[in-house]
Length: 212
Ligand code: GRF
Image (cartoon, protein in one colour):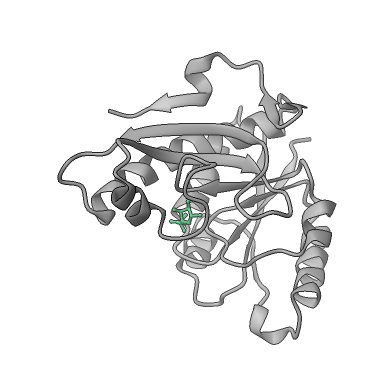
């Protein structure tokens, strides 16, 4: 039995689609069993439905506290017998109680090379900072935002004439590569923790990807 994965989204769901498409391969080690959104208007919901994946919406505005919202999310995940959670552009801060319940089983994609550029507007901030290398990170989720052991990263070069959109596009293309790879490692039980470091037994080229 493959582990059952829920993807949490708030928007268009391009990373979600990269996971759904990867999981179509018969030898992919995880099954995408649920897409859960905190917004009924999230474009990704329709894309997931078209791909035949079950969807659910838990509107955060209907709940007075983060804890009550998270409790309903938890119920949805339990109902769908979920083993692994992927945050793919999920724009809500989760309570430590929820995060701790999924420790080692919940991963997030962040559009920067962590620990640089945590938070929002990562591409604009990377351009302002003048970095020459930017990228994306998949990491285990811990209560602190955009922290947690790093599973995979990909680097992209920053061009002189890049703007936020062009740089974001280059990073996004790599997000779609490393997120399915990272989920496969977690689903296969290939990741182990050594302090803050995730060891996966993978050759360097498989967890540090460099786009040109
Ligand atoms: C991605 O850039 C992801 O890294 C960030 O939010 C964005 C979501 O995009 N966490 P999409 O909905 O997956 O297209």
